[in-house]
Structures are given as C-alpha cells and as structure tokens.
Image (cartoon, rainbow, N blue to C red; front, side):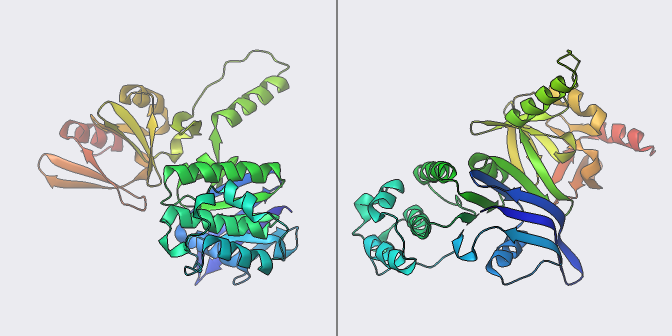
Length: 335
C-alpha cells in the first residue's frame, strides 16, 4: 500500500515540468507536496493513467482499484439527498463501510436527508470526502483538500486524516499552499524547478541535532543554528536562508516571504539583518530585507525613488531607499 516515485521526471514540449526526484509514502503516513498548479495536474494525470513519466517510475504497491482520488473539482449528484448519494456509492464500490458511521465522521448526520445542491461549499467537500471513505481505498490522493473550506470543515478533515493514519492508510496531498501542507501532513516537501525539497519543522530539527549528538557520543559541541523559525498554526517551521525571497516588517511584525507565501517570524528586522548578513541579505529599506541572490533588476523611478525587482513568479517589487542605493552600489562595485 505504499507509493514510490523513483527518479521521476516529466518533460513536455522540450521543457521540464518537474526534474527527477525520489519520494516514498508509506502506510500510516500523510505526506504533502507543495507545487504549482501545472505540476499538480501532471501528477494527478499520472495517477489516472492519462500521462506517463519521461523518466523514472511511479510504483503503487496496491491494486489500482484501491487508489482513491479527492479532486479539487468534482461533480456531485445534486438532485439526490446525501443518504441517496452515499447509498449509490456504497453499492458501486460494494462497500462494507457503515454509512451512518461515515456521516458521523464528517459531521453531516443532520444533513443526510437534504439534497446536495442546497449544501454549502464546505459541506459539499465533506460529502465528497465521505464518498471517498465509502470507497475505502488503501491509498488516498488529495488535491487541495482544504481550499476555501471553513474552519470547522478543516478541523473535520484533520480528524479524518488522523483516523486514516490509525487505519494504516497511505495519504498523499498535493497543494499549492505550504501552510496547508504543514498543517495536514506528517512530512511536507516543495517540488519546483530545482527539485524536491524537504520542509523541516522544529521536531525534525531536534531529531537531527540528537542524531549528531549520538554520533559524537553525546559530547557537547557548539551548534551553529542557521535556520530561521516561523510558526504555522501549532507547528514551528524552519527555513534555510536561501529559501527566503525577502522579509517585510508591518506594524512591528516581521514576515518572511517565500515562493509567494508569507510567514510570521518572532525576530525583529534588526535581529534578522544580523543573522542573515552572512547569507547575502541586504537591508534595502527600513522595513525590508532582501535576498540579493533573488534580485533581477534595480529600477530607478525618479532621482530619489528606487525599487528592486525579484526573479520570483510574482516579480515582487521591493522599495530601495536613497541612502541604501549608495550602499548597494558600493557592494556591487558600481560608481
């Protein structure tokens, strides 16, 4: 019931959709991969058999009938009540699951005699999840499971994922939002044009440190802590400095901007400036620190107005103060 990508690589029209990567998702495990919409769609087509890898393998150690997909966009029988829809799926998959138990699990008991078309968007997504639970696959593929859900439905999804872990299921989440991956998964990765990158949380960092200590027979060694911590819901996430595009301070709160998402950080801008100076970061404005490796252009708007344009997907524009422009020129060896 495991899911394995082995040197998996995809090309289209002489361009790389995603470079070669290795990933294994085992039973009792929820793994999330954060990536672009295009890559996400290509991966789902692989699971559906609509597309093939250019190189490498996708191994599914289970009967393909035991693979269930939770689509972002999926039609429903809106003229049927929930009970009628669930009975249809129950018969279709010859399921032995209890419809009443599943209604309780997704907390739709009070809606079981209501037609699907009158449900809210979040209730419809919970009903969609219930249909997948009736199917009872060994491997769950979930596309953006929490997109536009209300808070209560997100809590219910978390509860269902916990049950799937306990039942020995394999869960693979595809999302464009890093926060969603970190919230729902045991392990979170980012897949981009540079490959697959593991997102380390405080727990994994502690394990790494403990392993190093064991290797040194528990001899205390000074450890240089280079990662920058942020908090996503109840998890502390640790980012490597090169991952950060820029940092912004708003009303006394620092935010790390990474791949189009922002994450709050407990450090002040002054503290971050000191920590990140060795990694090529530059205080370009009183409210901004920028990773100079991510800068594509320096734009002069007026005699006293400048901006830095980054090479991220949003082509973010960061203000550059007049005094910092002089410092930047000196760093670059310009007159």
